[in-house]
Length: 118
Image 1 (tube, rainbow, N blue to C red):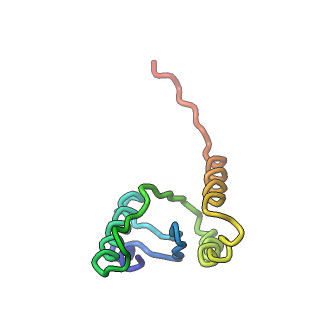
Image 2: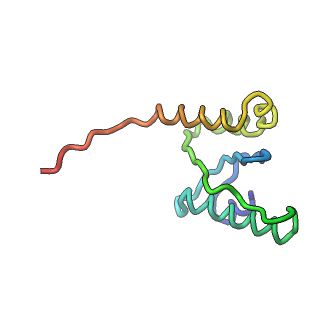
């Protein structure tokens, strides 16, 4: 996955693969969208897993992903969080973690008011 990210002129800061999901901290090139980078990683790794017969049957990723922006000052903290996922998930399930992230990020969204078009 790191090689794929590098080939997309982006940088992988941290990665940890859990049994049912993957956490990655990527500095994405402005030339590629979040959707494009995730789709390229998913397609390339799925093909690699099949070509190298690393899985019985058909391997596939889930049909969704989430991407969040962080400030540069949060890089070290998030890298540590990602690299301690094995310990973290002994205490918090994926579903609980996902709900926490969604709740947190929903609070950070500032609604704006659109003036009526005359």
